[in-house]
Length: 264
Length: 264
DNA sequence: TTTTATACGTATAATTTTTATACATACACT
DNA sequence: AGTGTATGTATAAAAATTATACGTATAAAA
View 1 (cartoon, each protein chain N blue to C red):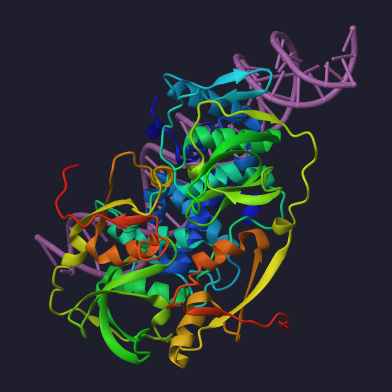
View 2 (view 1 turned 180 degrees about the horizontal axis):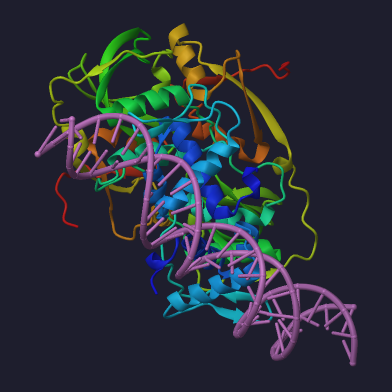
């Protein structure tokens, strides 16, 4: 039986179980019951199903600890994001008032989102009053949105600008809110978005002012053991990468490798 | 019937539906079928269930568009994170090779995570060789981990340091990997973590060098209409807030309000 | 030592959810 | 007018889940 043969609901439970074993190192029926509000019987089923998926290095039950303990070299059946991992690790303090995330609560106007979504899916152009953060001016212009972008923090969108005659990244918050945005058909087919289609390969290495021990830390943090870290990013999004990885900051731990060509 | 009365699986589907209506402005059965691999009949059930939850401003079926259209002032039944929203908005380009997220792929060593999780849940102290990023030195020290922290990007942990005699935030990547970490009982009860328990109230406002239109953009982006934005954060995490909101950057769009006392 | 509590495992019937299927309606498109 | 695709509803079958019972093992308390 494979993971994909399962129904969505049970697959989610087995993935959660998998994360418990990988990141907590152990799991109990109660974890599933508390998380998914299923019965004891179903939790027992899920454990049996999970164990049948794991051919080698399967978790074993420890009668002292009253829990299934993951093998030392447990192999996860699926990858997980940092947020997934934290969701599994954080439950120690489940009864606390406030979560541990001091996140910047950005906001997106639902109405504007539906308008942009409609323009993208129906392939329309839309007239927006867009405020430049450099000049401070708010100019009306026609744009043809093509897709949403997520930089890990905030949602932007990509659109062809009829004013600049090129594709650009736009920030929803910079659009002057309106009840009814002017929309229109796109008569001439849009050009290729070459900055989007082009993948840039970027090589990074620990900053040279770091000690060997500090460089080892940086390698661990970004998960590479080779000399350089290879990053592929769409050219259209390269700006976000620099800002997000803090490459431009003075205390940056990573720096670009200036060479163009490099054998992997 | 309330949302909480539903089973986990169906609740997830109705929440997805709710996000479609809120952020896309419309939804079809196919959205549920593609996302959750359920049957047409079940998708029809889910729509019926969702509509029965919505008392007023319910979505209505549009025979031209062959879709349920959210009312103009549709009220979501649950809040969603930016990632949730993006997951709903991004599906336009589902068949693309690479996702639109140029995320910094941080990594966390699973073995270290299980050791830290064990220390936290069993309330043990642990001996780690920790590399300082300021001095570059790697010193062994005993720490008593108390909880994991997520700054939106990376997972850290909070621990009492027996070397500094205070609580500090630690980065897993700065710990020298070991097969078996020394662990020990905590004999003397740990002191209160006052920096964790203390909530700081921070007031922010659009930077003064911004034009009124630019200030309006900042207010929209961070979702406040008043003069100031109130942010509450644990004192122990204030450092992450500054860095994460980019308050220290030269082109920062927000700045702290220096006054201590302020009436909301 | 005995008892109690709490994990685990398994099995069965009852219940609920979901699927498969059929048939009807409405609208857009050719 | 015919075709395709979306909706709606209904029913029986299949699958998932729950409720329940009973058994084992271990730790902690009486």
